[in-house]
Length: 128
Image (cartoon, rainbow, N blue to C red; front, side, top):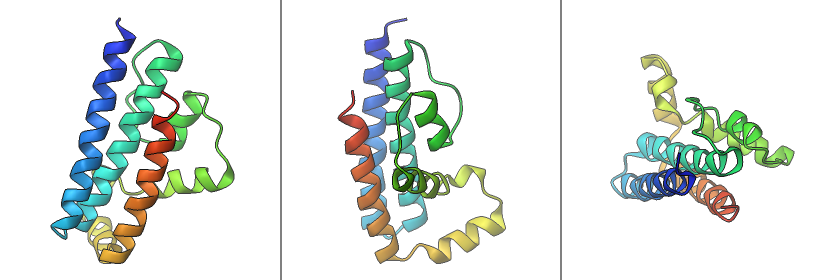
């Protein structure tokens, strides 16, 4: 397995997901903007996992678990933020949960969380 290719694949996917998150925010599609923010962080963590472990990352979406498996130490604040971003994974939600989540996704909330997501993304990217 060519780890550099795996890393580059996940990094490109992560950058595209982050860009899509901001585009969705511009279009006022706030819940999906946050979902794509989650994908961006998940994918950059998968790049880190591949580099640090020399193998493909596991098929999981829990960001705290991915960070732990990648041997990334987290402060309590970072851990809480990753838990919050993991909650943006819409694929894991039932329809009634999605509806409730969408109500929470105001423009201000989404912009604030995307800014925090991008900070996490850049911090993780700096480790590659």
